[in-house]
Amino acid sequence: MRASFLFFALGFLAGCAEKESARFRLTGTVTFDGKPVPFGDVLFTPDGSKGNSGPQGIAHIRDGKYDTGALDGKGVGGGPTVVRVTGLTGPNGKLICEFEMPADLPKGEGKHDIVVPKGGAKGQKGPDI
Amino acid sequence: MTSKRQGFTLIELLVVIAIIAILIGLLLPAVQKVREAASRMRCSNNLKQVSLALHNCHDTQKSFPKNPYVGTAAQLPGLGWHFYILPYIEQTNIYKLGDPLQSGYSAGTPNVVLGNQMVSTFLCPSSTNIESSSAIDSPGGGRLAKTTHYYGNAGPKGTNLTLNQLYPVNTAGAGQGGLAAGGILPFMVTVVNQAGMTPIPAPSSITLNDIKDGSSNTLLVFEMSWIGLEVAPGSFRAWQRGFGWNNDSNCSKNVTNAMRTVKYNGGGNYNDISMGSNHTGGCNVSMADCSVRFLRDSIDLNRVLLPMASRDGGEVFSD
Image (cartoon, rainbow over all chains, first blue to last red; front, side):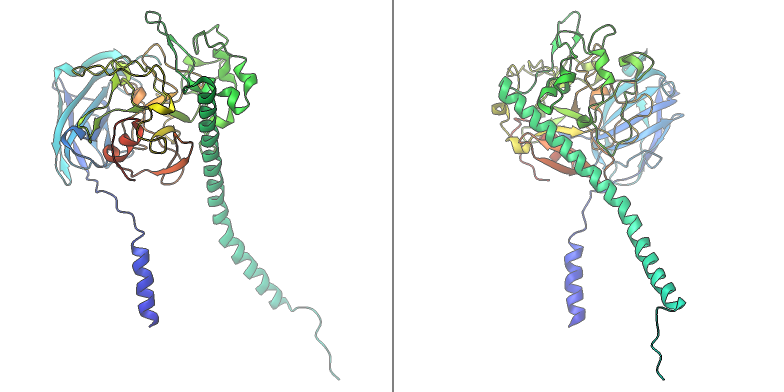
């Protein structure tokens, strides 16, 4: 009798756990004009125009590589995603490239190499704001 | 002969002391948690005051504060809405120091000196960073200006899933991610839409009647104070600033990124910085009916956060 009450109470508690959509670790390289991008970040936004929704991922670029599992990174949700790359020469450095491109990411841990086309070139200091 | 025992033995005393010590040990970690809970309550009270001030301003001026963008060639950056609500939070004396017809932070104007004033209603007590991250709006003397942790909802940027079309965004300000126009405290209410869209006539300033989605369903002000934003190139600027020369919107932000995700990166994302706070698990926001809510940081971006930021998108959402 007491045990059944306990299970009943536990059943209620189980309902309190919050369901969060899954995040997957994504790694890869970022190149621009054939050369690795030294610094910056990559933002993975679920593509609403293709009906996708879920968590937004971010990763920081260090020496041409990114890893959403690294410090300050957040895993991606997968599916149709808008990938936004901001490449800099270094911390507080010159802006090399800034580009947005669509991608279809795996629904699981994966690898996605990013090649920023020439159209994404910036080559200037970010404005002083 | 019977002798009555007087007082306690040493063992009894030690047991009592040990029990008290255990109780204090249980209490101490709880006190730290209470402190954060108190900060969170103060923060939600600040948001309530700010929202009520915006409503009082609306009652007097018949619209929410306009964020002036004076002149097209000179692009004179005006003062932001924080300045215009000062009389409604009993800070008239600071209000009198400013000049709305002049630039928000140019050297030599009375407005740049406003950065010296710390308005505690604009600061979340859970955040230790209360200064501007840039020397560009310094009030002089090598000091950094005081900042704010509460930002107006300029509107969503992305795709409206209900209508399957893009949310309205001004092409002006594109250098920093554009200026969203579908919120309550946007910078430009005359909408020049993104390329390929027909311009939508917008009201000259936002009133409560323009909030077609319902005032209790639309974001008014949110917190942007999470730890990490101060890391160079920092995301904070002087509290009185409105819209600046370099397309930067300072007192209102676009809602386009998930909570606690995107910082200013020195490139073109200044207007798109994520909302978020140092409170555990989410951040405080206020809705256009002045109610203050706590949003979880796992909230769905495209299905909840963007619809919540739009004032007339016709979306259905539940959080």
